[in-house]
Image 1 (cartoon, rainbow, N blue to C red):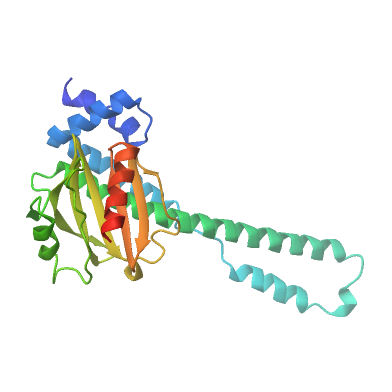
Image 2 (image 1 turned 30 degrees about the vertical axis):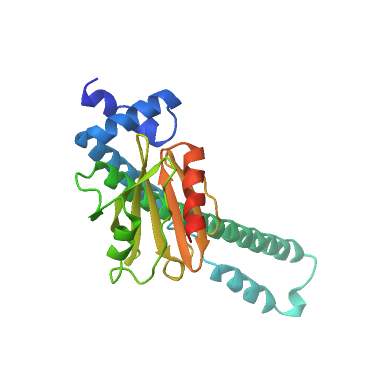
Amino acid sequence: MAADGWIEKLDAYLDGELPASEARAVNAHLKGCPECSAEALRKVQQKRAVQAASQRFAPDLALRARIQRNVASQSPALWNRRWLPVVGAAAAFAMLLFATAFLLNYRHDRGSEQQFLSELVDQHVATLASSNPVDVVSTDRHTVKPWFEGKIPFTFNLPDLQDSPFTLVGGRLSYMRQSPGAELIFRVRQHQISVFIFQEQQMRGASQSEDIRNALSFGVRNWRHAGLLYFVIGDASPQDLDKLSELIKAAG
């Protein structure tokens, strides 16, 4: 199939709408085609930008306070049956506005979390498409971990992968919100998995809930431990993502 044929499938692939067999075929093609990988990254960034734009607007909460002040300032003489419907309508409108603002703020928080995950997925896709995916290349955890010393303001432990299906490929620096973190690359069979680690205090609001399962067709596992946020992202099976997550948790 020509590159154009694969590119036509990218939107459905990124939205998780392809059958499993076709999704695996597209994923395998992306690993070997720089043109399609670059286009996939562009589409992911475009989806993230559209999602962020939808969260920019929220009603002015000060409006509710102004309505309350206006109602309270009315002369007692005006409080008669003629004005009761007006006051009732204003109160109902104020309550509706407050409920709407609450809902939009909740959606904004969720949107910020999804935007954060989308940015991590962007980095994972960029790593898949890169000809130099890691800054330190090694299968030895005792080489990869020390490489990060002095480059990030925290430390972490790597699991012993002996007798497991996973292989450590290496690691690279990752930046979110202008704060440095670690991206560790693992491979299981033909799948590549990124593990991101950041300081929780620098990423407040990034993940309000744990154990998020999916983001833009990739499996996601996340948790917090000892002041750090962990995100495991890849297209490997749910069982592989769970197993790698458990190994990392045990090492920590």
